Amino acid sequence: MAVEFVKYHGLGNDFILIEDFGGELLPRGGRLAKTLCHRQFGIGADGLVLVVQDEDLYTMRIFNADGTEAEMCGNAIRCVADYLAKTGLVFGPVFQIGSLSGVKEISVDGELYTVDMGEADFSFSQGGAVEILSHGVTWTTYPVSMGNPHAVIFVDDLDELDFQLWGPRLEAAQEWPSGSNIEFVQVLAPDQIRVKVWERGAGPTLACGTGACASAAVSARQGLIGSLTEGSVKVSLPGGDLAIHAGEDNHIFMTGPATRVFSGRIDISQTEGVRKQ
Image: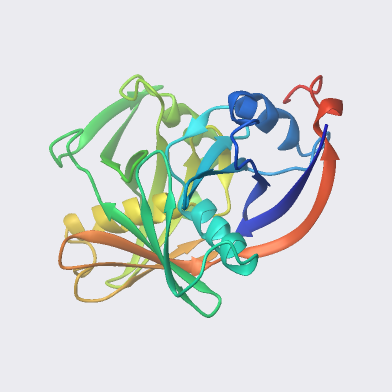
């Protein structure tokens, strides 16, 4: 069975987009993600996005490279927005896209997409810190949900962090029954933070939209940067910058680009036996 796909990235966080309007591929989305996202034996990506349709609403269903399904992804939703807008499936400067974490409103300004990501949810720990003991080291984490779980950790210098060691250890900490995205944050200025994300189910990624929102929300809540309702904060990720601000209703807004890389066709029946390394 051959399907058409489009390869996208949002600041280097890359995805395979496939139209699955009728939901035929959805039951095997996790298995397809493992094979299609393989960097050597597949197309290669951090995740697979199946775009399904329910009447007039297009919904993204995103599967990480390890086959697990994510509730939400900020970079992926910008890519889906670009695809829908430029193929004429949606019209106007404002439209909506569904996700497992709810319907999100998208605003288009040239090549930039602003997504209403909803409110940051601090209920996991009532907004307080959670101390995690991992391999003899205690980490102070700040749990928050942006429709998916995050744990924000502040460090003095990201360059001195052993990211490859501590990312997977903290992702799998027993405090997170279903795992968590881990954000290591260095505050650079009242309006800029630097972030590296170990993404649940994908590992190190060049950018993470929900992670940028989580990092900015926690940084503002802890008084380490200015209020997000009074101006945007620049979140500098390895793949580039996102602008994050908040509305008066405390909704978090993320602004950034989406880049179409290439398109093609692949016979998915030929990939069923490929295992993710």
